[in-house]
Figure 1 (tube, one colour):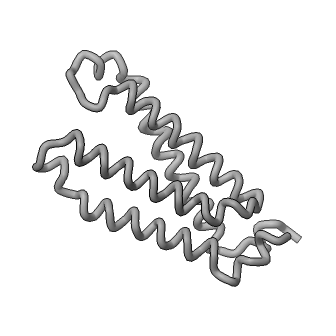
Figure 2 (cartoon, helix red, strand yellow; figure 1 turned 135 degrees about the vertical axis):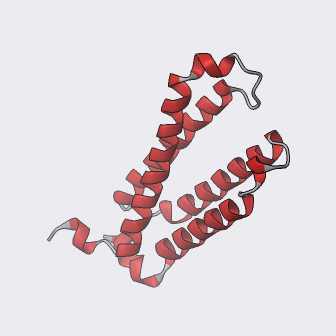
Length: 137
C-alpha cells in the first residue's frame, strides 16, 4: 500500500506547510544573497548579513523538520509547534525592535494571528488521537 494513503491528511498538510515556510525563507535567502552588495551600502538594521544567516537557519530548520515528519519521527510532534513559536517570536521581535511605528508595523496583528493559527493547527494535527498510529508504524 502507498505510504501517502496511510498518512493522515492533517499530517500531510503540516508537512506541506512546514516545507513551504522553508521555501519562503529560501526565497528570502536568495533575495538577500542577490542584493547583498546593494543592501550593505545602506545603514539598515538588522544587518543584511544577520538576516541572510537567519534565513539560512530557518530554511534548513524547516526543511529538516518537514523531512523528519515525513519520516514519521515522533519528536516532530513537539518540535514543529516549538519551531513555529520560536519563528513567530523572532519575526515579530525583529519587526518591533527594528522598525519605527507606522506602515511597517501596521500588519503585526494579522501576522501574529496567522502565526498563532499555524502553531495551533500544527499542535492539533500532530497530537490528535487519529494520528497516533502514523508515528507507531
